[in-house]
Length: 492
Image (cartoon, rainbow, N blue to C red; front, side):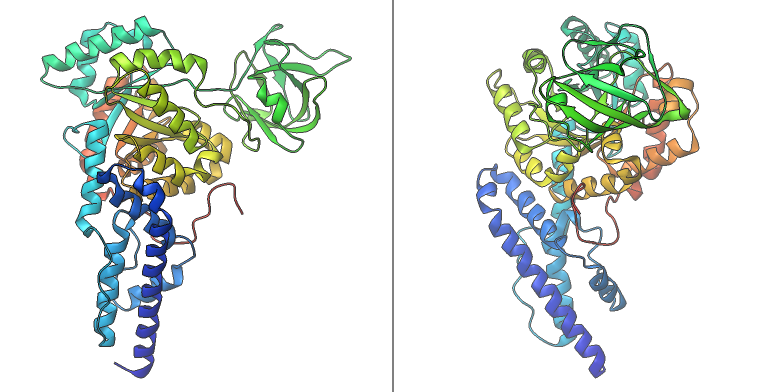
């Protein structure tokens, strides 16, 4: 080996050893949090610490140099960071003719993938027959329909989902009973997941009908009552928004988006004494768009002190505690939200109920490592990549990057992920998928489960996904190739 080559390899060895030291230091910093976890999950928490250390700075140049020397680039190693660093250190030590340092990993490279698979099975139960499960949203009209439930099971449904924003306990119970009857007749058990409604921000009822909006229109947001009214010659349109915390905490310059981002506005003034906020519409879909009753509102720049667990959710938990296998928490913003849910469940039942954190806000993206550590305290657990509200809140142009980062962090923690929102929506509703939707569904095979929505062609869509997964499962690796510095969304 030439002098320059030897010097380069020695520098690589020093860099990798430094990385291992940083990873060990981050693990030590996690020691208190790890002590609060079940013993079976402590290796996963340590691996998360190692991954965060690896992503603390940009290692793209190091990766290229490792590849040029025939070594691992460290990419696609989220599930087993320290074993990979140990292996690279041993190879570089041999190339330099020096003794390798003692191994520091508490698991093997194979252990990482096995832990993730085990945790996915604990939460979502055994998949049939591929590794990525199919989660199907049960429509309200299917309550009590054993034949329809059977057709979904036959098509490949692995997990049934009920959205608690729709229907009531009687309807949910009828759906669960008919599902379990159909599954038992086929020698199957299909777990049931219920999504809590959460503190969804919505507009009120439009007293005069839909409010037509174009760019430049000015709206006054209020929480006096639940009524929105059209503008008159003397005033702007008044739009009711609930909960009240929106008008109490939004600030000038904050974005305010209505109806899944179809109407995009920005706060221009606040009047705390009157309890009013003025916003100016900046853009609307198709040049003009009507604001209708009870449309969703997203305020991604505003930190609101709203509990993720509402009074309505607590009532729903009474039902979940008795009948359901998994609960998904909407609009999680912090680890505290998960802790609140776990306490509420413990007060209601001794049954083991899986908890899934729906990541759909910038706050959840920034707090994801802490949320994962909180989830690990009471397994089984998982994360739902809720791309609808998340895309609106962070901007659709940032969604592909956010998907990759969420998948990578969860893989590092060995926490399973459900890929959700508008998967094959055109096929579900009209019987034919678009090219983009098929590509999206194939990409979703990187996750541990894919969630499908409601429509007339649900059974056909489940069959389509079943076949797609069987052919794409070999390309299930999640992670990005380059380890740029990880910056939580919303931070510079």
